[in-house]
Image (cartoon, rainbow, N blue to C red):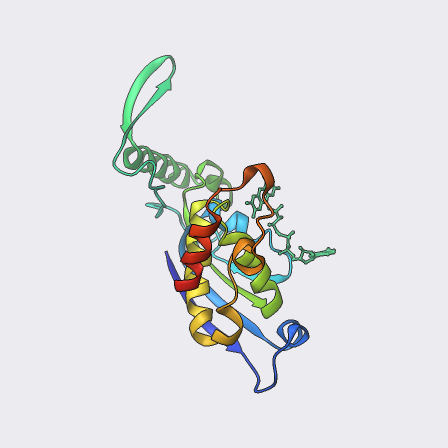
Length: 201
Ligand SMILES: Cc1cc2nc3c(=O)[nH]c(=O)nc-3n(C[C@H](O)[C@H](O)[C@H](O)COP(=O)(O)OP(=O)(O)OC[C@H]3O[C@@H](n4cnc5c(N)ncnc54)[C@H](O)[C@@H]3O)c2cc1C
C-alpha cells in the first residue's frame, strides 16, 4: 500500500473546529489497497472519490492484496467434493486466467470483472475536509477497525501529524482523544497500550 498526500488546502488563519470543516482539505492518493478496503473507505460520505475503473482498465494479471493471516499458507478448497490444495497465489492466478479467458471470448471488461475477488488491488484519490478526516481517523485507527483500513489510516495520520501537528497530534482513536472507549463489550481491552502507542506515534 502506498499513501501519498497529493494536495492540501491550509490557509494561514487561526484553526478551530469550524475552520477545519470550512477551509481545510486534504487530497490523498492511496494505491495498492484491496477492493475490500476501498469499499470501507467510500462508506465515509463527506468526501469526494475517484477510483480506478474496472470497466475500462483490464484486470488481466490483476494485482491483489494478501492478508497477513493467509500469507505463505497452503489453502485447501473443496471443489466438486474433491479436496484441491492450492496456495492463495495459485488461486488468484486461476481467477486471473478465467478473467483472461472471458476477455478472449469478447466478454466486456465491465462484465468479466464480476468474477474478480475482493483482494483485487485498486487505486483511489480522495479529498476530505479537516473535520471529516478527523472523524475518519477516529474510527479507522481504532483497534476494532479492519487491519487494512487501519494500516491506511495510520499512514494518513503519520502524514497529517507532520503537516499540521498542532491539530493531528491530538487525533487518534476515541480512547486516545477522550480517554473513553465507546466499543462496550467489543472493546479491544488495551486502552492504556493504545493511548501510549498514539502518544509516541
Ligand atoms: C469498526 C467498524 C465496523 C463497521 N462495521 C460495519 C458493518 O458491519 N456493516 C456496515 O454496513 N457498516 C459497517 N461500518 C461502517 C459504518 O457503519 C459507517 O458507515 C462508516 O464508518 C462511516 O462512518 P459515519 O457514518 O460515522 O460517517 P461519515 O459518512 O464519515 O460521515 C461523518 C459524519 O457526518 C454526519 N453525516 C454524514 N452524512 C450525513 C447525513 N446524510 N445526514 C446526517 N448526518 C450525516 C454524521 O454525523 C457522520 O457520523 C463499520 C465501521 C467501523 C469503523
